[in-house]
Image 1 (cartoon, rainbow, N blue to C red):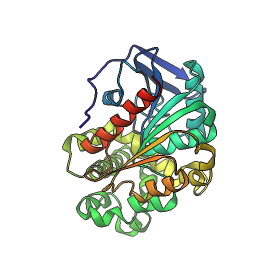
Image 2: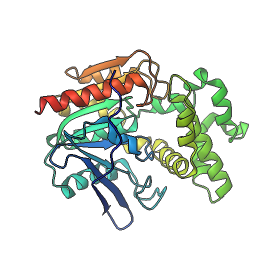
Image 3: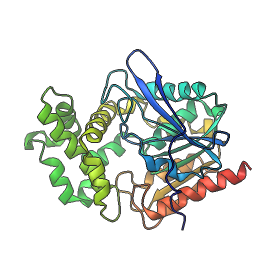
Image 4: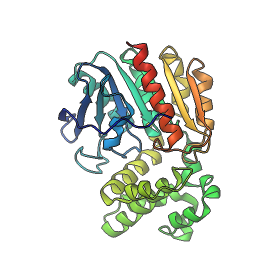
Length: 316
């Protein structure tokens, strides 16, 4: 079974001002002459981590990570103004131009798969391939499943903890109730809601409990950005049209694509991977029988690294 490549450090870091408000953190690691690959993190608002570099053979890949608007080392932190899907797609194109890359491989999971697909549908000529994990189509029913009713029946104990922040009379609209608190001027209410929101996601992300992942999600800096930005995007229907990814899939059918999805993914149920594969029939679909949502579950990691290794061989 494939495991992560050894940890490496960036050889170059950038702080790219994409407008008068937002500056993005970007880093490059691996082989400067290698195959360009863009790691697109989840959330939105999740930010990058050092292990994200380790899905790629550093001798073969020019590994590019960036923190999307408002999260990680990008500034300003947890900022919602001028933070929409269209802005993020434009940012990715600005990064490509800044780094003088003609085309690149996209590697994204969860919201990272959403943004990868939307960018590819906007700039198909710039995408050499896609490796996608935990497909998230960002439809109303996908958001409702995780934040209102669905996942709550699988993790009722964790759901009770998630509900505690919200008064009983507001629980019929959990997303709206959380958004109100996450955007309030009350710092205590804001942080309490952010931690509960983020811990709920962390607890549901793995088939087997993973306290390290939950601890990562509960870090105040990470939790505030992810909870605020996710709620901002989801209450605005991700700033896309209903089923936009599916309807525009014809634009990207020619792009080599690998889909990896855990059978027991509760955050993004596997139906979404099948819906995508139906409109991208040439894509490879790998169902991981003993995994949930997280890229760090062994079966998901194994399939993702197989895919990056195979892509590198195809370009040799």
